[in-house]
Length: 309
Ligand SMILES: Nc1nc2c(c(=O)[nH]1)N[C@H]1C(S)=C(S)[C@@H](COP(=O)(O)O)O[C@H]1N2
Ligand SMILES: [Mo]
Image 1 (cartoon, protein in one colour):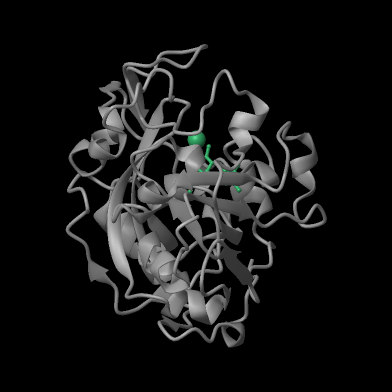
Image 2 (tube, helix red, strand yellow):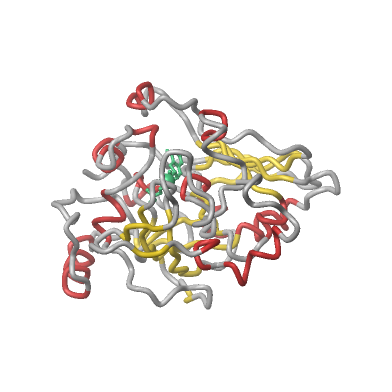
């Protein structure tokens, strides 16, 4: 199912393509497809050019494309892992507009073209650890969130960044049954948001984001549980006070604002000590800050991470 005509795509680093089958052949040849690999319908994605490799990438084996795109949490499109892949195909992500305002000197409204041109695109192969105790390795394409934040010039009052996902109950009818409020909202402390690891992703595996992964652009915060990585962002606000976050609103005793990956602090209903890497059988030990401690641990020095879970 093709949801975007190549003629709709004018952003500079994108070239229209019908090489989906070539990509599928490439993947089948280079990666042993895991048990989750299924027949995937054609995705309306577009190849991204001029992407440079990042030193922040892990050299761990990337999770197969089919698992990354058919084992998703995107509750607006349903709560089963296969629902987003099934239901998000017709989600309209072009044209798109995102407002960046609040405590900033230079508020901005970005269209798709401006988003893709904001900063040089990098491939960042990151570990992803979901709070549900599974993990993946995902070859994202994007640019540091701090490139956008520097553009809008946060004022001295700006202490947090608040994010809001797009929500349209007509396009996301399955959201009614999700049991969480929409639009989905998330937040970071400004210094967390400025950390070079925090990424705004516009693609994965060399192409624009499939809708189920948060097209046209989403946050990726690799040292935090996956729910912090908010999808299909429509609004970004720099604010003075800690903003509300969807999972904390829904179950505050289970999900805090920080949500750093931490094997020492269990979820009240299950252990966080281990994780299942999608495609693997034996469980792995979960690493504090998802293995990114040398880059981010200093953000939390002096904080009690049991209280600030
Ligand atoms: N808008 C929105 N963003 C979201 C979610 C969601 O339900 N809605 N789920 C979160 C969770 S729990 C995870 S694990 C990741 C999953 O991202 P992926 O499907 O690209 O792996 O998205 C996060 N971002
Ligand atoms: Mo998650």
